[in-house]
Image (tube, rainbow, N blue to C red; front, side):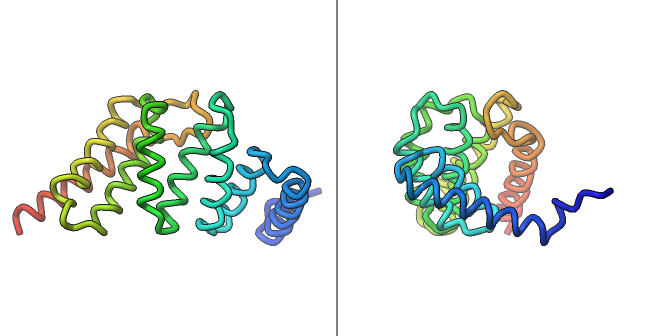
Amino acid sequence: MEHDGYLTAQMANKQERNRELLLLDLKENPDDPYTLYQLGKEAEIRDDFLQASNYYTRSMTRTPQDANWRHELIIRALHCLGKSGKVDQALDIADAQMPLWQESPDFFFVFGNLALEKAMNDLDRAMDHWLPLSQWSWQRCLDIGERPDLEGSVHGRGSFLAQHNLDLFNSQMGLAAEG
């Protein structure tokens, strides 16, 4: 007997079923932060970053500070806001949340990505503000190190993924200085 529940067609059916169940739950409990969070994750899986960011931001305003899944919620919200073109909103949220996540490499990894995205859209302040902020953020990830104890932590953001970003950044900045 073989299990086919993880084949592409089966996964699509499960995801749609899960989405329908979550939407039913949301209809009954429209302010439930955990349901909003789960709907955000479901939308993110489908690469619908705009819808995911909408669910995540609604969830953030209702999620208790001590919820064990709040770390993952904040990181996913920032990522999806950036992916959906809402970099300024993501940076505002990151600025407000930064004091709470001083020991989260995941937070600073995503923050560095957001600062890099902002640099590409704000060329006037790229060199003196956004690019150094990206570099500092990824270095902060390395200074913190891995934090698998934080809910939703991604292995590598406190080590090799941050180092990769820094190496690429430094390489590109070196090329720009030469050119």
